[in-house]
Image (cartoon, rainbow, N blue to C red; front, side, top):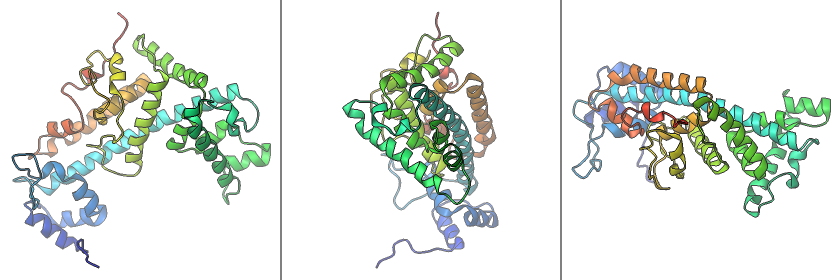
Length: 335
């Protein structure tokens, strides 16, 4: 069998980078970076902004790095992206935790018998929702089965032994974000609207806004944030990530004073990092969001001087950040 990707020692990897025009300032440091961080993750994941293109915008073949491009710039983008992933993950988890709490509370408020969450009749009766309902019930059942017989102590096992049932407010903490998404999609219309109202109430009071988050918008928010969460959790490249599955960004026009990022956007437009930030503003508390933005700016200040052959502003554009991006996040308030 032909092997067109043979194993290469780290010294061979470094020599290959040099042959393609990348400047290695400190070979020993580069060796340590590649030994401890993986060539594929550092180089293949972050080389694109630093590769030469032809007049038509296509990458040169064979590949060549931009003139005077240094390994330290490529590694700086890798480190910048890692810090960004950790930050985004932190605030996505805050939203995830709040959503779990509200979903469990509103469901149990309406359905108070043990294991009501395993009954089809307690979910949406719409034909289009049947698949979500069945998937959700299967997820919840498997989660109980997996943990009730676990060799280690956990709250599901504890509740079954002590109380002979597992409340949803306990079970929900064991769900992945993807499983939580199925749970929300399976709910009937009234419960979905109550949860949206819970988020909308704080949003309207905080920003003096007349707008409310409707069910379709909340489903898009959950779906989008979950996909970005997976990128962060699986340590994939975040800075230039865009959703493969598009959302109708035009639905978010109503929220922002300067909505040029969203205005007249078709359903096929890119859902990038800046859009993710915009969505998080709708569901995080004001203090949390301010801390989030301050942390983003702090990371930007830390790394903006690390790039010479590609301006930091160009990297921000790849991420969807428009000029004066903070101002673009101002909410449209009641006059």
